[in-house]
Length: 363
Image 1 (tube, rainbow, N blue to C red):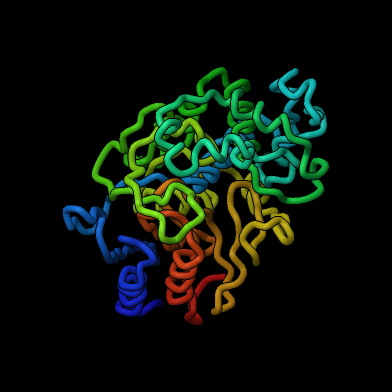
Image 2 (cartoon, rainbow, N blue to C red):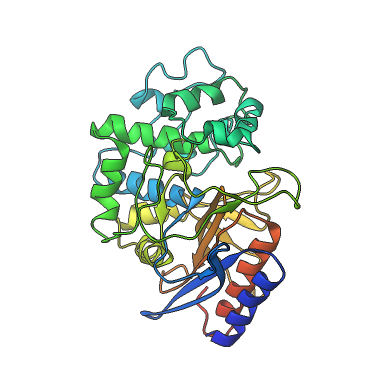
């Protein structure tokens, strides 16, 4: 168990050294919760970070998508060995990809080889700097964004290697829609959000406002200059994130969700075993020292030597991480209201080391 004051000192340092305008940490530990914060939710008004604030969670949404798929797999609606062609016939025709060779499991563990539409040079440039203001209220359909990816060759043959790609989680959600006959957001709500009473968690898609108290999301709009000015990126259309990164939540809801997910309360043992079956991420350019499962990953390089499980994500002006014990009883949810940075990630790892650096920590 960590010294709470030591955690507070880490948060204070992150703010004082300019890592972030504000930072929050909420800890679940043996059924009890503890919250700490430092810095500002709004630099203009001086409003401080508070419990219960909502924020965009970026790629932590992938864990929700995987949970939805695994629930459906447990019900026999979908199979992890189902191919893209089975549920989306013709979608990949005429592209460099074979929909008969790419499975739902490969989409979730990010080994399908599909190019990441987010990194298409033209698409990336349209969300960089001042250009973001022209795009931020634009609605994109999943098919539009997938077709951007299909213009690029595969990054590897299906199943051969991990390569991070939002395209894969779009296709997974599109398969959910075809198999259920319902919009993905409705399936997510029915199978995950409502059963867990995650009242602060939503998939807003075209709704541009964060629906409740929230910190200003301060972003440099992916301009490669640490001195670039900060912009308020709180309001945006998140169809560019959708099932791969378009959700809103809170630290409290994230602890509830990941506790249920990691402990196996959401689906059966067979699906849990699939979720925890990981592939190496070495050489992918992604986070070193990790392995990726189905919507969750394991961080293996804490100074304490403890392995922690969960997910995290970044979007414009927001970066969050939720990691903890494999049984879901000890978790840490962290959030900063600015863009991802190595310094912010290091701060999160420092908090995790404090929480999991004691002999009683669960591996």
